[in-house]
Structures are given as structure tokens and as C-alpha cells.
Amino acid sequence: MVSLRVAAAIVAGVLATWGGGAVLGACGAGSCTEKADCPDPGDAGDGSTGGDATTGDARADAGHDGAADAGRDGAANDGGSADASDGGSVPCGTLGIACCADAACGGGLACGDAGTCACPTGETLCNGSCIPSASCCGNSQCSGATNVCSGGTCTCNGALACTGGEICSAAGCGCLSGDKVCNGGCIPSANCCSSADCTSPPDGCHESPGTCTAGGCSYTPIPPDPVPQACSPPAAGQTLDGQPVHGFCIVSVSYCSATGTPFGQTPPTGYESTASNPAGCDFNGCDIGGMTSSCQQNFCADANGDCSTCQ
Image 1: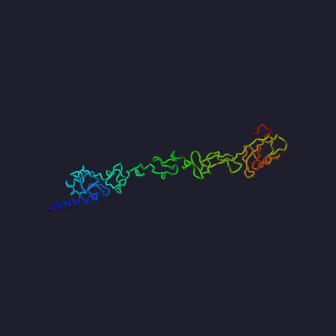
Image 2: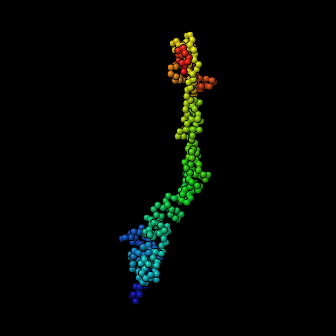
Image 3: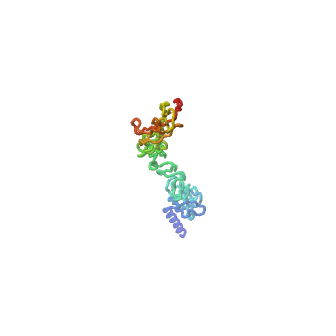
């Protein structure tokens, strides 16, 4: 009679354990490398051998193994790897389920530090699946030169990403407000893209178009232009700087003055701008030909009686 009561108590304990599911309170002990307690709702809490197909059974459950339990797990020795119920109740390859080790996850998943199946190193979760970490999962990850995630790659409306600093929009690649396209890229609208954009010199005494360098325009001053004039042949009373001369060699240097004010020019070698008789070798004035900025300075030299020697 006592044996029947003991047997009934054992069966009741087994049934109670079955209904609540097995909980691995011993994870991390001994050679166990589990990361979390792992419930196995289909297992009666039996089995302690390392070969058990379940995700792990507590060693304290070894007393439940026996022939009396065979009807529940499908094998007389339900602690072994051939146990019909062990391992079948926890799905494999499912993200988020509780796990003890990578083997319990399957499907290429890894048992994460939180004790649940997660994507392995180098991959990330995307809509319930694992994808390479370098891949995009949704459009929100595509910005700037792209706006649509297509097959794990950020694109511009499904086409190649924009280049050269251009921004992708529903209309395609283009520059932001305040910028403009230049050689396949974007630059501030105020910058020059080529020398053809340099058409606003600081004044009329600089050449146009100018030169575009690194987005900025530079303009070259209009250079002076020395122009030889007709020689004044030898005549009585000719002087240059108070000294007698025999004929004048004359050179007029044309130049530009943005303010219309004359300023000294560099004389050709051997020439000078000084008082002369007849007058004219010290002329320096503007408004030549009715143009305020057009100026001229005269330089003279002694012809020494032979105008052919003039430059």
C-alpha cells in the first residue's frame, strides 16, 4: 500500500512538472555555457545527459527518468539523445526565443547576451531576418545622395547614387538651394565654375573674362602699351630737361586709370618724361579720345641728329 502511495506521489510530481515546463536553474554551472534559463514547455523536466536533444535539462531532474515516464516522452530512457520529446518543443531558427547556446537557435542565428536568439556578428535584424550589417534595411537609412533602399543597397529612386555632392530627391540628382552644378558636382552659386563665369571685373581697367581658380575669379589689369611716335627732326633751339638736343625720339605709353587720374608710367630705356622745347615730352593726361579711363604719358630721348636711331 505504501508503494502505491509513493508511486502516486511520483506521478503527481511528474505531471506538475510537465504542466509548468522545465526551467534551467543551473545554467552557467559546471561545464554549462548557457546564457539564460531556458524553458522547454514540451519536456517533463527529465534528462541530465549532455547528449539530450533539448536545449538543456536540470541535473536535479534525473530522478524523473524511468520506465514509468516512457508514455510521456516516447522512449523508456527519456534522458538520452533519442528522447522523442526532448528538443522538439523549442523551435529552431527563430529570432527572439530563449536560448542557452548558439546550437539551440539554429538557422544561422546566435544566442545573444540577452539570452535570446539574435543575428550573428556582422549581420543585423531586418524585418524578421538577418542581413549583412553593411546593407540597408529601409528607406530611412538612405539619405543625401540616395533615398530608396533597394535589395539592401541605397539608391536614388532605384538608380545609381548621386555623385559629386549632388543630393537625391524624387526628381533625381541635383544641388541644394543656393548651390549650382559644376562639372558633375555642386558648388555655391556665388562661386565660379569656369573662367567663362568671370565677367565682372572690378573696373574697366581689368581684362574680362578673368580667370577662375578654386571657385574665385581674378582679373588681370590692362597692361600699359608703349607706342613709338613720329620722330621730331633736329631743329634750332631744341632742349630736353634744359639740355640741347638734336631731334626728339618720342614714345607714348597708353594706360588705363579707373579713376581717370593720371599716374606715372615706367619709361622705356633711355627715355624720360621731362620739360622740353618744344613742349610735349612731359605730357601725362587722361580722357584720351573722350574716354575718362584712357590715359597717355609721353617720353622723349635725344635723336642725336638721326631719327633712324629712334626705337
